[in-house]
Amino acid sequence: MTKSSKDIQLVELKDMIIQLNTTIKMLNDTISRQQAENDNLKAELAWFRQKMFGSSSERRTDDIAGQLSLFGETVEEEKPVELIEPES
Image 1 (cartoon, rainbow, N blue to C red):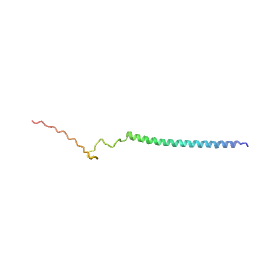
Image 2 (cartoon, helix red, strand yellow; image 1 turned 135 degrees about the vertical axis):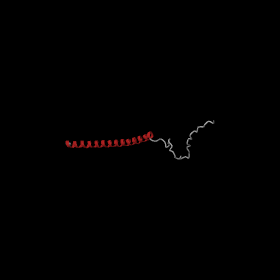
Image 3 (spheres, helix red, strand yellow; image 1 turned 90 degrees about the horizontal axis):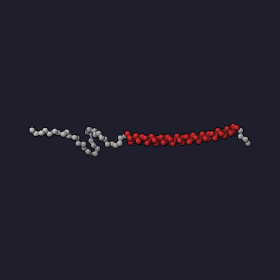
Image 4 (cartoon, rainbow, N blue to C red; image 1 turned 30 degrees about the vertical axis):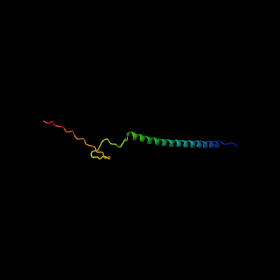
């Protein structure tokens, strides 16, 4: 039994559809992997930005006037130096 040209075309088209579906699945998998990698890189970049530009500790260098210390440390105010007048 010989196949007609339409039967051959039909078989070729079915093969092409199978190949295209395989390609689409492969490309979708690639997109999913790249999106996951992109999300991971964004999270890593945010972490590095926080480490680079964020505050590095809770310690403050500037004391606020009237602010009590959490640890009971008292900050002694510097007393102005009094000049001693020589006795005459």
